[in-house]
Length: 168
Image (cartoon, rainbow, N blue to C red):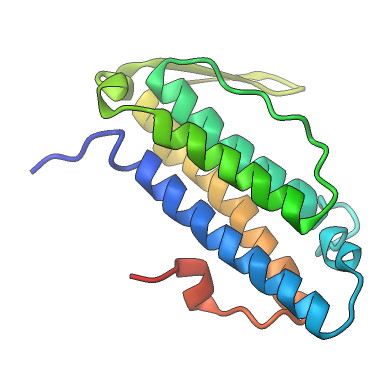
């Protein structure tokens, strides 16, 4: 049995975005239960030079949709970074999931050899599709999902490993 690029990307991103959504829902409920202003969590960060939680979620969504689009050979949808609430972040996750669900497995045929270029402020990165997915996109996506989890856990939200992993 062989796995396709589609199978090891899109459904994985969709599942983890669902887990991220559930973690954010727990954070919002925690804020309400403890009478904490939600902006405390939305603006929280692990270190002064790291992005706040809101930006972590935005980048996780961008990483998932960007990877899916690049591997499928379609344009990456652009989402304005205007989220100010848990509801806004949930909407962004939902838009990202909707985009990913619209991608079809046949769009990923040959994606493992597709040329992928990522432009950063300091350089251009060049990959073949499989290397992009396995060595850049997944790591970037999981970094920002994990950092979101860690920010919330550090701030007292009762989330655990199974919240991160999701239901089996």
